Image (cartoon, rainbow, N blue to C red; front, side, top):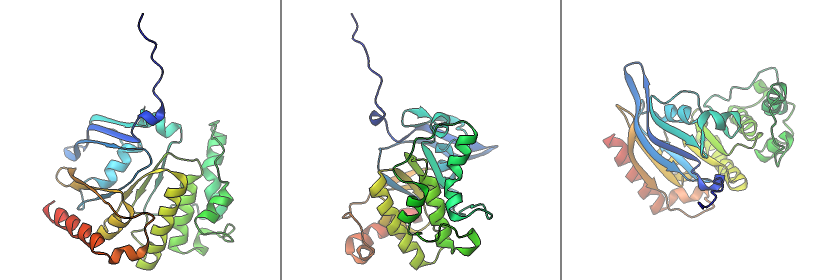
Length: 264
């Protein structure tokens, strides 16, 4: 008698698995034959020249665009199944907050939409108010977006992304428009959130130093068409502090990635 096979546990799957995935827009191939597995709970940053498909990769993983060839699988599910199960959240470069809603009501918005659509969203470990506190906005919950700085608006967007307990958080240059001091602060807060939640994070950036500071691995993409150039392991102490950027090892990684970027 054949042995009974039990269903695979979610932990048996990669957080995101791309197998020969390609994306085309008309005659343009934006991504070509991408094959990689991103383990659960890891923080990956994505670098590459303009037009190499960094944002396209996030949109493929989040089910915003389809693959022209190959496949994208999230925790063993199709991207559509993972999206409908609220397992994926996306933070864009623009915070995209509703201007007439307070910081708190912007964070609550995904829960409200879920209830209206009859979607059951499990109660998170933190309430929307607690999430705002976690991102450093305690006392600003009643502020409207125009009353918040750019960095504060992005923190609201991160709290909103976390309210449904996503297992995979996609971030497309969320700090690109901020000054260096605000970016450093949010980098530190994001690492703390990652450690606390265990969420898998894919983070697109144009900053080499930001990629090294945040990432356990840096995925370097090459353009025309977008494809994997190299995956670089970042072996730095954890938890990371801003002062690590002054160390020879940090600068060595930055130099290595800069050389790779020049070859792309």
